[in-house]
Image 1 (tube, helix red, strand yellow):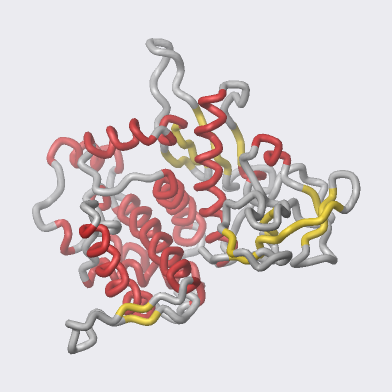
Image 2: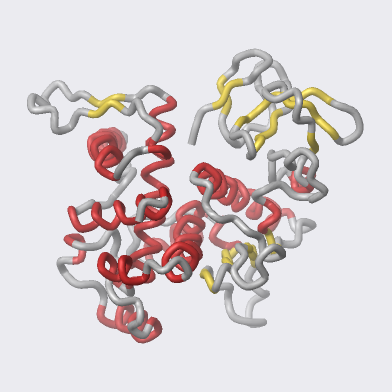
Length: 353
């Protein structure tokens, strides 16, 4: 993720900012240009972005719920922006708790869509492609004893996210119960959309053999593999070949987990680059822990460039977290086979495989 700047006063802005705290200008993100812009009223519902005065437009319909700060592309008749047009079901916004949780989900979803747009990946809606279009359902659990709880998951472009995952306490409870080192809303979105892009970029693009050579035979029975995982647990040496314990379940989950981590790494490095960060420990005489993040990770030539920056950077961040009495920011080990899998994902998003 990038940092942004107010075109009116020069104040530094974050992706989710709705208004500039220095000059008071209303702000909006222009997805087709990748800019967060200060706005001036243009009459009616239209606003003129100071970053692109020739592109007046209006806010996404979800802005009235403070769930979106994106503009609809100029000239579009759609009520929703490029991110919110993928929504299928949203919670009852008359319920304050549901509304608050949905907003948190939208923050995460918009960060996901930001990345997908940066790579120009296929992003068709369900209306555009009724069979494979991407659609999100944000569902609240039914009242107690009135039905099963909502399960987060993916099914042929349909991604369901349980609304309760936006409850920090409940999400932490589930993380502990499942023995996970990491569980976030953004992580859910990145993982589930990985299944969607396996369909599009692997299965439907003739890359099954290439993918199986890296991740294994996905034709094995998924339900049986899932049952075995929860009954028998993970192999003792799983970190030598997998990015997470859950990735050991089935090649589909290995792919989705690796996809999610690739997005974590690239987007985090972009923010580090925006801050001009570099790592050069005084005790590192050989330079193994040194890195200068002075490139665009979204346009990196290969996984080697990304890893050369990521490994020293995340070692530093984990060390800082420990100094604050916190767990590691990135509590994962990237063994050489895992880096190879990340390289496969890199090739997919860049179209080089």
